[in-house]
Image (cartoon, rainbow, N blue to C red):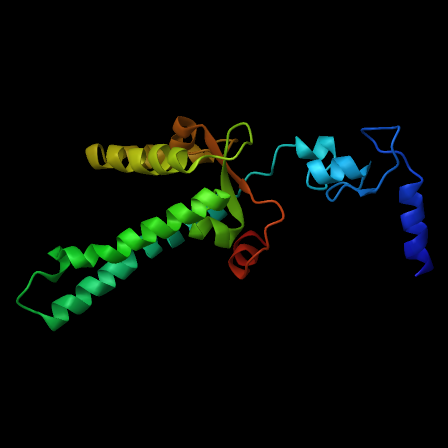
Length: 204
């Protein structure tokens, strides 16, 4: 208990690293630099250096697993419903019925809601990663939905080689696929996000 009190006393007696005229209220949650109450409230507990520091890029393996999860969440419910419909009504083209695509539509709406809130789809949220703009600012849902997702899918349907070229761009140092360059985005590790079992399993 005495050690805790001494630590609090040392913080209160130290000046803020950004505002020397003010006493420190706490330490930066990332690097431990002393900051005042104003810095803590306006910068989510981060010092100026950590606030503008580039976030760590997501690993290629995490991005791959997140993409597989998102793909499965989109395709499997409709596929399962189509199979069940074909078994129940053998004479009808079950996979062509409009009702088969309802689960996929619901999955898209859920994904859009998740992306709008955090910049991370279901797969990315499970892996503890998210999409941001190239300058680190939050990426809007329309930028992600149209430029990162809809446009590449449309180009892939027109030219199958685009998907391969798009994926190969991730081997670069920036770990950005071609659709990331088009949309002006990158995928980074989500700060402070609780790491799920999937994230710990894939990223260690």
